[in-house]
Image 1 (tube, rainbow, N blue to C red):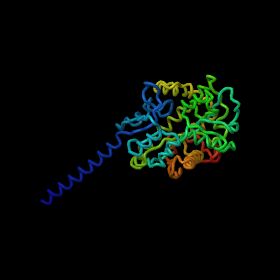
Image 2 (cartoon, rainbow, N blue to C red):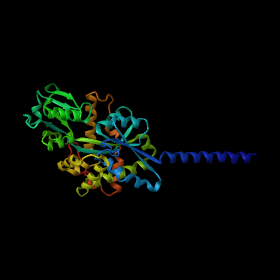
Image 3 (cartoon, rainbow, N blue to C red):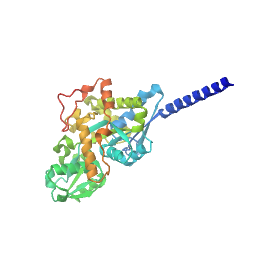
Image 4 (cartoon, one colour):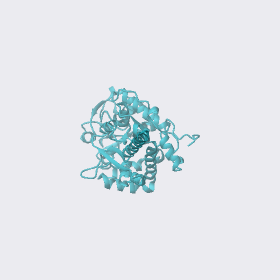
Length: 361
């Protein structure tokens, strides 16, 4: 009788263990990755011309996990960062590509992520009508300018405004997105428009002229992007997280090489339906591709994110304080660089965006 009970007890233990193992395996058979849908027309949903689209199009993560029978599920969201953050907070995503403000806002509002890989070097431009008398940022005093509020554009504009010695009371800000803002500046309904690289095709057509950019105010004013992961997923599966970051870093290095640029542009343009001209112009305008392509969460990256977080709170976009150093998990990107033997591909950069000569890579 005692033996029978012992056998039954042992059998139950084995069943419970097997169930736990199966449950754990099932939880990791799908890795869910989110990004904003920037495809045009009837094109396949994608993140436009971007690293996310390239990774998806080439099935790079699928190749990494094929031997483990792990599936990769890409989810593209209309509505940008707020929708992605909601999906993260509802545990519907494990990883996501976001702009810096979107990632910061998500962390401030409870999506509970970790910053895994950085992005930097994006520029903003001050566009005016071709015959405008505005020749530099300081000439905005007393003028009207279109800026999309609650976005990276507003954050970068307020920074540039301060560095130019101007106050918000010196100008009139009108809240317009890209379609409305570009139409307003070309029709001279506003004096200027502060926007990203999507304005460059209008410049090339002669519809606007560019008189200033965020690069005029130092690298601290450049745009950041973020690759984030769910904190709970990372804690449960650090090995899988490392492999995802490995692929992300390897892909970043590939697309940063000049000889791979056209393949990157053409493949992502075909997938998304987005004209690659704008991105080609943006890449051509980058004077230091090494800096702009760095995935590292170094002193520069962390300080830039922190500055954005503080500005977002100051502007009332977020109400919580976000401590970037406690949010970031640089160990994954540093391990990826070490495993691939490419730690020297990108130096450590200081708070001003200058290479740290004596830093140990």
